[in-house]
Length: 200
Image (cartoon, rainbow, N blue to C red; front, side):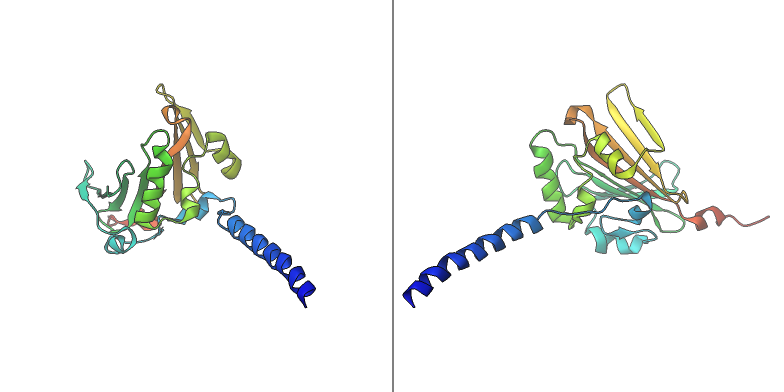
């Protein structure tokens, strides 16, 4: 019996070590390659979400203003330092048109501030993976962009359209942030928005 006990202990330890190793692997987020059509949900907000549902998605807003032409109202969610989030709502339909999120931090603060935002807004890990990617990494996942441009300040813009042109996603990669993607804008176009005017 004593010999059996001595044999069992290493086996149990081995199983525990393997189990712990497995848990570590599970903490890594595995997100499938996305298509632009998959950006019909971002920061917990779905395509077609209306204004009155916004607070249940992102919590209390910290400010807001109308666009210069009064066509949209912009809600600001600035509860996390250096990680502004804003949402555009169509003033006529009440539907969300644009979601914008940016990380303006530099160096080690980039990841730290992003993590604070993830906790504050309960952001899906698969929405977060784009922040910190290089332009090439984004193109590897999404293919060639519909528009690519580099500004005089060294800011790279990658813009993608869905096949039905109802979704446009724009990524910005900043040179001063070690060429990391730190800005994402999701633009949703609703077919009924074009039919609001009465026919003559």
